[in-house]
Length: 411
Image (tube, rainbow, N blue to C red; front, top):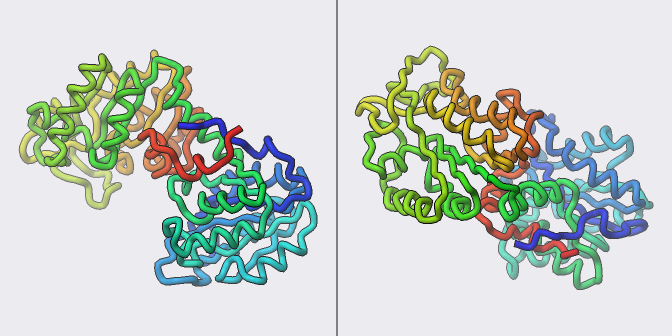
């Protein structure tokens, strides 16, 4: 995996038109942004380019846009928020065509340090298509607006979309630079290098509901990590594969052989594969999920009664997992240890988060539910890095080349 990419620090943007792909996929309620985290994360790159005297052209998708272009998924609220945060007018191009004459005219009128925000890239309809289809034409039109391109949208970096990777081909053809922004660079430095060049001992912790979601991640991390810890619903398939009784717990019977192979692989490679020894059991999954008045007990993970369901790691396992983290130099965590949304079933996830918060190791949270868990439990500021990508983080952990990273110029 080539990770030595040009960043915004590696080219002179003064007087240049720079197209920046951001991740402004923010939650909206009645036209108001309810969480500005993604906008705040993009500011360092945007400010750097403004300070350098670039003409900054921003683009992003928002939502899934299933019913065609609509005002409810317009980026207009983002332009308003950016104007406030940057202390300068961000000109918004409301045109649903994204790259039409309105965009061209606005870009041609820009002075150094000006900022323009294009409309939601998915309004074009073919933004997400494979290269060679109509997305190719859109990518070319985007490139015609700019001299250089910066990708700072890690959450979309695993997708070969027109505005993420296809556009780089046309920027390159015209002699421009394709670089990554500060947000992308941080993801590469932490998440990419943690897997490719970890400081050892390297401990990887995987949780979440389904084994199927993490097949390639488990396989890849077994080769890279010194210790692999399994928790969450996916653990019960491993336990059943070893002949354990798991009651009503979540199990994927089609993956039992795969789990046996991974257990054998760990042994062959001399790696530690830690599975839960005890588990917190209930009569069934809480409904609603945050229902607090539920009755729980603890039993051995391989002896769960037929009428009970395992929903969190038990106290012995919490201690064992925390101990495994103590001696680590690098820890990557993706996926909660149980139903952390429920106050009664959050103890396992909390124990792992606390162990990470107290270690001297570099601690990397691989996006998605793990990021939500450390934020919710109040440990976010104690982590070295919390990834901004869900699917992108997983694919990085699988060892895949992400199109949005791969397309940037090498240093």
